[in-house]
Image (cartoon, rainbow, N blue to C red; front, side, top):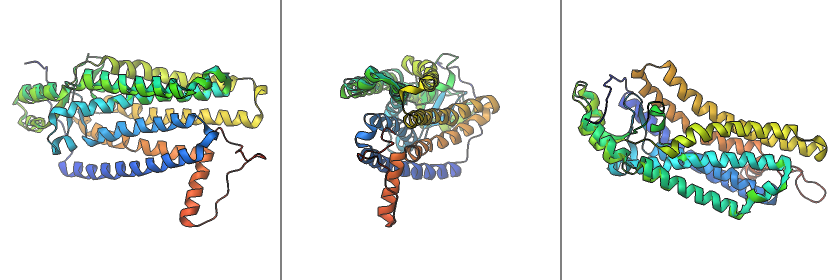
Length: 438
């Protein structure tokens, strides 16, 4: 016996209702895929030199959050907080990939980690732009900077694989040890792939979520704020750095690193899940049968994942607020009133994205733990995670509507498709849009 398993009579959602959620998931993911292609077309075609380097931070952020949730949706994650495990269905069950379920979780989690890093970059870029931090702008626009981000991405993937790779292995152990005094739950666990996360008490089931891809999203969010800060305060060095190709290459390397680490950490999770299925007690036959009929992931403590979730993500919230405050405090005389208002609007838009993410993910996730009984949390988390899939839709629609140049691009496409007249993008005397930075 390796697991201190709590046997509960979970109130699971009916299979018929889950089938409707599967249809809903397919509709949302296919719609998001087409919306992403449309957003990609609009951003690349209507950015040109006006938006400059920042368009790559926008697209990278969207890619991270989209693929993080799309990969998670592919295996229909179901969280069991009392058992510190998650059940994987979807393509893992359909193609009999229980041994590789942990790798799906690892890759997904690495995108989450990169999302956090890009969040830092976005705020830093806007800060440098709004406060005339020329060096920072040059740095974040340099190729080496993007190269470093790519290296970081690779690093995060590797770490995620290392930390979560054995979650399926632990899941098999969980299935083996699950008591038989609840036959229904034991049957449920043993009939699916189970991913079990081995964590310290304070981390709990939160780290059982396969958030691999979200890490890089956080990185990109940092970059977006930094870019807006440098732009709004004329931090020219920072703007140049964050606009350089090497900076983007570095971000890519970081992305690969995150993914690699995630795969290493999660790679063996399916094997552990099989052991979990075998050891699951027979006191609850239904739950034992459920675990046995699905893939179970068991994941050990994730050092990199905990760093992103409990340190870097809260720091990204503070960093975004700090960049916004500095942009508003920057001397008014350094920009024209129109330019100053535009920079403030842009960094506020970035802050709106971050606030929406916080209230879309964090607040409802924590609320379930506080306001729902343990027996009802499985069903509540199942529904909540399906609402997460709509967040990329919000981000892409917000991007197309909030940025004036992209909004005009959408109007142009609409006018061509429906053959109606659409107002042109306003330009100055030299033909350059007056809102070219946005």
